[in-house]
Image (cartoon, rainbow, N blue to C red; front, side):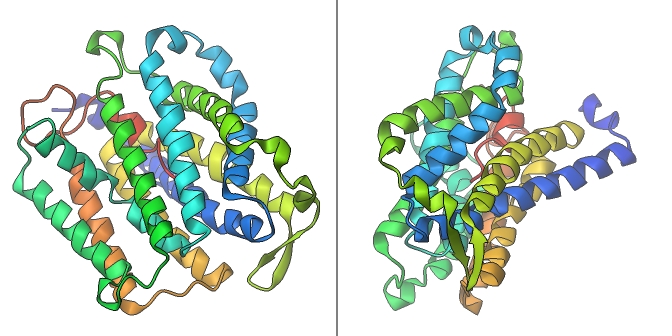
Amino acid sequence: MDTSENTRGPRTRGVGLGLALVSALAFGGSGVAAKPLIEAGLGPLHVVWLRVAGAALVMLPVAVRHRALVRRRPALLAGFGLLAVAGVQACYFAAISRVPVGVALLIEYLAPALVLGWVRFVQRRPVSRAAALGVALAAGGLACVVEVWSGLGFDPLGLLLALGAACCQVGYFVLSDHGGDAGDGAPDPLGVIAYGLLIGALVLTAVARPWTMRWSVLAGPADLDGTAVPAYALLAWIVLVATVAAYITGVVSVRRLSPQVAGVVACLEAVIATVLAWVLLGEHLSLPQILGGGVVLLGAFIAQSATPARGSADPVASGGPERELSARGTAA
């Protein structure tokens, strides 16, 4: 029996659920705020660099406080920075420049199903029937989201970039499974996030070359479905709300709930992002796409709940010490 779960009273769980919903809302608004900046003339990589570098600057005091992580978990920090921060967000922002925000995020939510594929076919560990069902549902739902019957009406490169974001999440999940010995104790998620943002900012600086960015775009307006909005206001939302506040509320919610419950609420991010893109950007999805998106989220939830923990011999496990981080650590 998980005694930590018994210590969470109704009020604590209520606060945790509220924080998880706030986190999902904040994360879900990142693509909606970023797309107008991209359409205004900023490159996707430049928007990602602004987001990550700005958030890294805000989180710098947290990194200083947890500087021992550099010695204790260097592989985990490098994996989070390269894959969960730089890789996921660069692929996601590049994808939304070509396909609707909701489609890109739903494809990204294939990550839990892909993790199970890694477990089954690469690690050759058994997975439960429920896990296999989750993978099948996610794949079937994705077929509806991209409307395979119409010959993939969306930009193929955009779809591949969204899939690349999902693959970067898989790489991070696999790395975090081997991020350190169990005797080291679980790392503080906020510390890992802070260092991940710092590492991601350094990597993206070399890739995005921000000195070539059209900085003047930030001083002008951006078009939000016909409404002129200051570009700097959208950037402030992306950095302060959709990154820093989203990560912090997400981590705190996991501690008040559990990785599994918080992960379920996190699935609402895709719903929120789709609704916001519909209302604010005019990106309408068809009924089959909406139904398919629901099936993708259901499959992702089943697959995430059934992902084995590190070192577990069972086909289904509740999660290991890194699951708290992975439940909220790779959102777009």
